[in-house]
Structures are given as C-alpha cells and as structure tokens.
Image (tube, rainbow, N blue to C red):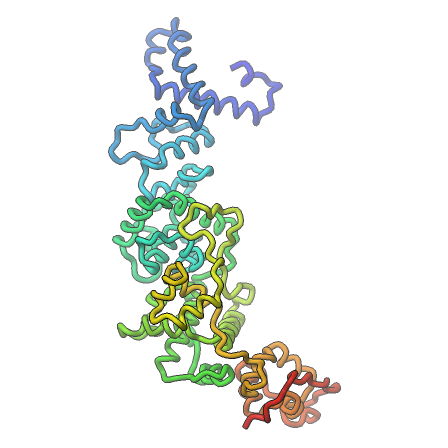
Length: 478
C-alpha cells in the first residue's frame, strides 16, 4: 500500500499498482479467501490474507500458466458466460488473460463479441453494428472468403454469414438483432450452422481471430466504400440500357446476345457495385428462373477482358455521377498485420491465371478444372473473374480495326485528342477506322461528338497531330 499512497509516485504508475492490488484480491477470492472471515476476526486479518494473496501472486506472475488457467476456467455452469460476475472489477489486462483462458469454453458468438481468441480480448465496448454495416458489402469480400471458408460450408452461405459475423465483435446487440438489420433474406439456421462448423473446424480459432481483425480494420476507417449508399444507387437508377450494352459489345468485338444477356450484364454491375452475390440481387434485376444463376456464373466466367474493362468503366461513371467519385470501384482489406498461416487457404494469389484458363478450356467441367489445379471451385471462379480471358491479342494486325482501336486508345486518350481540336476525319485517317466506329467509341465513353465545323462553334487553337496505330496492316474497316 505504501507505494500507492506515496505522493512522489506518478499517477499512471499508482493506477497500475491499484489494478495489481485489485487483481490479487479478486484472484485470492477465487482460490479460497473468505472476506467474511476478515469481518469476523479482524485481529487475525494478516494470517487470513497471507496464504491466498501469496497463491494469487504466484498465479498472476505467470498469467499464461496452468495455475491461472485453472482458476479462470473453474466454472460449474453448463453454458458459461464469457466473463462471469466474479471477475467484475479486474483490470483490462487481467480481463484479457481470463478471456483467453476461457475462450475454448465459449460459443462462437461470445468468442467474436469478446474477441477472446485474440491478444486484444476485452469486454464488448457497445459498438453500433449499423455504423460498421455501412462499410461492409452484402457478402464478405471474395478473396477473404477463399482464405477463411472451411470446406464444410457452401461458398454463398459462408460469404453471407461471415459478413454478418463481422458486425458482432465489440457489439452488445443480440445476434438476432444484428441479423435483422442485414439487407435481403436472413436465416437463423444459416448463422447457427456457421457457428457450429467454424467451432469444429481445425482452423476455427484462426478464422474467428481474422474476422475480429477485419472488423477492427473497418472500425479504424480503412474501408473507403459506403455500401448503403450504393444499394440506394442501384435501386433508384437503371444500371445499363440496351443501347449502352450493344455499344460495349460492338466495341469489344463480342456479340451482345439477346435480352437475358443484358440481364446478366446488369447483375454483373450490381455485384461489382454492392459486393453482393447474384442470389441477393433484387427481383427487378434477377429474373425468377431457376436456370438464371448457373447461367450467370457461366456469363461472368467467360466475359472477355475488353468487355470487362468497359463494364468497369461504365460502373465507374455511375459512381462518379452519383457523388461517389472519391470511392474506389472495389476494395478489400489488406493482409498486412493479419496472420494468414493458420487459415484454410493462406496464399490465394499463388495460382497462375493462365493455368486456370487453360484448365477451364481443357477440362470437361469446372469441377474437373479445379481438381486439376488442387484449388476449390470458388478459388477457380475468383481467379478467372479477376483475370478475364483474352480471346485474342486486340492489338494484333489481324484484329478488326474497331476492336484494335478500342484496345489501343483508351477513354482518356480519346477525350484528350478531341479536346486538342483533332477532327473526326483526322482521327479516322490516323487510326484506320470508319466514322461509325469512331462515333461508337465516343458514345461508349460519353464523349460529346464535336461539330463538323469547329471554327463556327468557336473552337480556338491548332489541332495536334494524332499518333497512329503502330504496325497497321489491315485495310480500313467498313
């Protein structure tokens, strides 16, 4: 007590001493100290205190040892609480240690709520799930799903349940309340199954610890996307009309197909903007047909790179025109500072995308292709979509001029040429394309078509010389 009362001792050190004293007394009561005995026999208080306090000191001196573990886990309750009332008043440091010792006795919801499997275990601070919900996609990020998902849980089920689980760390709200705030269909059975299978999986502790780390990363402001705003954007605006889709396909050298293909393109955009799964898309976008989801999977898997690029550019314009210009199109938490070694699939980028596309082309089914590469079907889909196939080299001399033009000259370069005063005729001559192809490109990139007579429209300045396509050996397209 003397150092605590010494005025020369700094306040922060005195507080640590007080915490140590309170921790000793609470541990001592757990191993036999009878405080009522002190009231009955104050003259022998020292003899009553000395042995329990000595035992408590030895236990506290080895916080991760077997003695303190036995004290922390001595609990007759069939369904023990994370931090029973007898531990009220302990310091945050001792609370973290007690929670870590009790971790394996807790259910998955309490393990997440108290972060009991991490060094930062603590009482829930009452985090508002709705604040975290704004920055979370409808389904957990696909790369993290591949790293975290046990093989006993289906990919879509895991992605939705894991996203809901990200709202649990630090929250005091019941799980049913958190689940009730989730957009779209909700399933209590899904969350129960998620918890049971995570608990029994050999990677379960590492999976839960990673979910806690991801939730903390989001709370620190790392997530740059407001998904609730994006959900409103996608519900209030037409994502893609038939004209825009036809322009994309013509410029990309791929067939636009019939109306179902346009529906797939709209769902693809919805996925990209909201981070949701196709099955979560609203009925206005997703036809109620059992064959739609398998067909959409094939559509997304085989989209060529030029068409993917144009869809992404279209999504970017949608965001820019609705006040989301500061947000990236997609985002996923960094792996920095997160231990990946204990996860089911720690290194998801080790696979060569070319090997994935070769396996898809050569094997009779996607399952056979995944088996050949020793990866999951989910991993196969992720890699193939992240690195879409190049059907041919769009810059090759044998490529149609309209496709070659689109591959070599991007939207910014084309906008710059028009802004510098180059006429449509100059651009056509330099790049070997027709007026129709050039107009198609301008419309695809939302670039205003300049008037035929620029002097009459008030244009000043001298046009720059257009760079021409290198190695142009094909005749001008008709």
